Length: 130
Image (tube, rainbow, N blue to C red; front, side):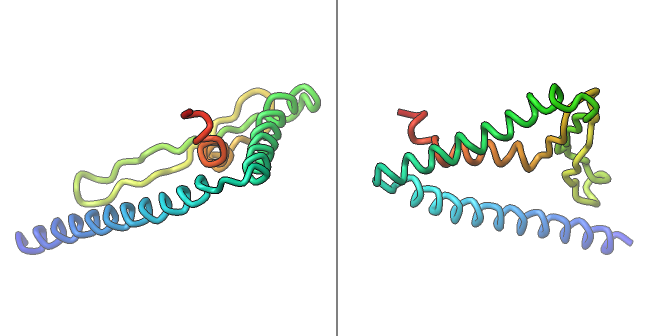
């Protein structure tokens, strides 16, 4: 009984270690891609990136703020990512999307939120930090 218990615990620890190694490898690759995109010196390319970023951010913000006034019967549904812990150390925790409905508006998913953060950081990050 004790050996089965220790085997389960060691497998859970190995699984967590593999997940962390993969996350670090992904972050390194993503950083190289972002650095390549930020290092382009062409002025036209920089203005194109900024125009795309402002267009996407403006459309998402515009849609969520103005749509309730144009279509008052539309409800706002917001999806938030929340962490659901596992059972002690035996099972892994997971991220789950919890949906909240507000009185009026449209759907704002975590994808929209992450898209705005990524576009703002990638396309305008080097200009904000100067």
